[in-house]
Length: 70
Image (cartoon, rainbow, N blue to C red):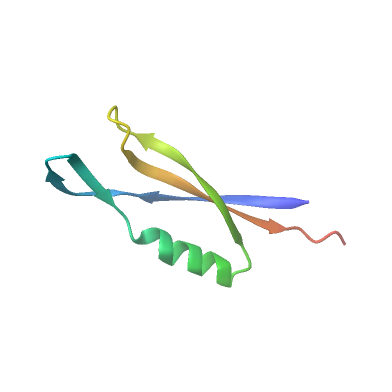
């Protein structure tokens, strides 16, 4: 059986351009590396807060770990 944990990260508005807003995050790299060192496996993400334009402002990173069958 697997157990799951979720960690929310935020995408920051970094600028404006002719093609619209620009959102970026570097936080996911640190979070995924930290969780991997703890034995978690990254399995995906779910948009948690989204603007009407479709830009994702916050997302939940999903991690899983196999639970001991002892």
